[in-house]
Image (cartoon, rainbow, N blue to C red; front, side, top):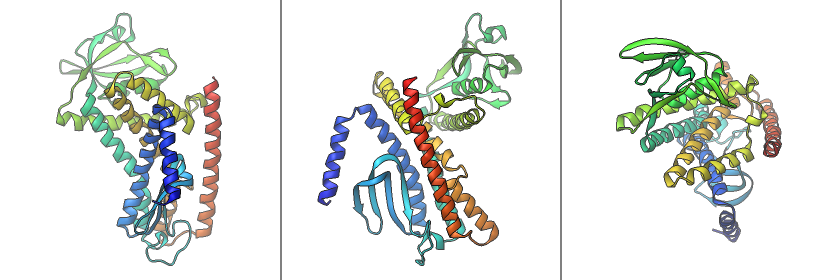
Length: 361
């Protein structure tokens, strides 16, 4: 390690010591998720024979960099992203190992691998979450007096299997279905003593985006089979959660107070970590896993949005190339990616000011 890298490393260690632990944990979580995303691009690019010039975590000037056999590995000063720079990704290159000279399917696999690795991380973290903490299923253990559930005739021992014709297996599934309904009546499918029936129930609003029907549910410790099965259910829940959040955002049911940028995410994670750690090490681990799942799934989905400069935008160009049998003009594609990047930077600035504004509310 040269003197510059040594000084930067010492500066980084000093910052870690000075900055509150919860903030450090938030940045580490975000950096880890970005690392997994970029590693997806990196490993598939390597397997496809693509020359990777730099693998970086963070943006802006380099803090630390190490020369590998053929790739530069770096940590940059702004912990808000990262990149896997491949030769010929945004320009024509003659080298046979350049991105632009590989088959369209190799390039599609390389681009798609980033979001895919985020989803793989979500699945593994979901399994770990269920394995450590168990799960709360949809078997009713008790019904509170004078609540929508009691008025609908629900009883202890009933199992909720579907809500509005969507299968549910976890308590979170029920909560999400009620949030999505926004106080409107929802149809519950119930199994009692082997018989199935439905009830139309209108949830009570407890506070903003929080509804209840007045039931207590059963928490279970998981066996090995349960861990895999309910880990898959947990993954499904987060997929639905992410899609529902996007739908409610674009429909106006969520407002800008419900949207967080990088500063808001760091604040949310640090507050969640402090709350979790107040209940001991297991509480801290639960909050860390929750935020890894939440942020990783959102990062994977957002990157698949077909906007130039994002993975989704690049995939659209590659799919068009595969259909046409020839690539789109490189200069035109590069310009569109530049415009997309500029729009993303403008969005980041908006989210930054939105975070600051929300802190004042």
